[in-house]
Length: 324
Ligand SMILES: [Zn+2]
Ligand SMILES: [Zn+2]
Image 1 (tube, rainbow, N blue to C red):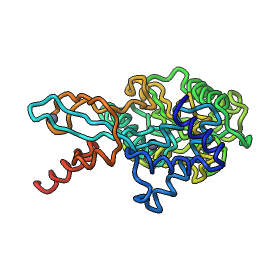
Image 2: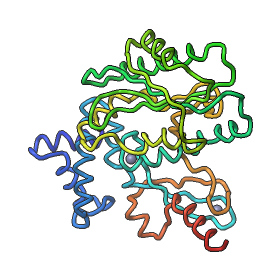
Image 3: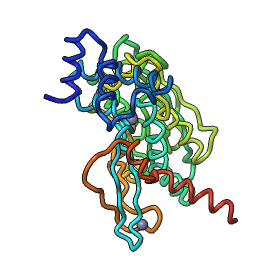
Image 4: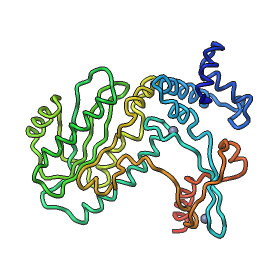
């Protein structure tokens, strides 16, 4: 039986919440942050995460529930193969889409990945083409299911293909979004294309999806800013209610939230949602990194004076500024 499932049944048997059961564990497991060191913020974060984890477990996503609960609490040691054998602490993140800690990290990675195409557009502009923002909206049914999300994205893809029929060199990227604390599924598309008539867009969207609302505007922001504007939707979970966050994770399980077509797809190399985030090279000397065996609590690793691998880049950037 999975450890977490064990906790859940014990919590039930003992008549306490999962959060309390987990708290009890910190008392007897030295690898977790001791309860007496928990701050009010830690407790709030813990309550929130426990609630989300319960929703995930109820939907059968036990692995994700465990990852979400443990996000950045445990870590591994990465050692470089270079002469100096640099050592780093790399926390294990859950990388769930709606984790308040991981969402900004996803945003930064997605931006780094997709901004390359903008450089290309800048260097090789096509006459009459512009970056345009399109919004496609679906009817709010009061619930959000995986099938609904998949169908919605299929419809977006079909609509854009129909709209750009016969056009060469176009590209689009879109992000699924829901309204704050509701189930209103819609999408923001950033498209590089010739002029698009709003009426034509509306007619195609209605025919393909059955939904009526579609909007278009020429992006007032140019280049990287237009992409930043669109990707900002992934940087923050669209809810402060753990029940809702859990339900969103369940609905988006097995689907992608960021999609690309044409030029944007070519530059994304097939992994538009960018789920892979592993450090491969030493940020100090560039040598290959090897992961040491074993998983420890982040507290323990920090006590060994290991530095966070993600902090090294920031350190270097700061030093550079001072030297210039
Ligand atoms: Zn996380
Ligand atoms: Zn190194």
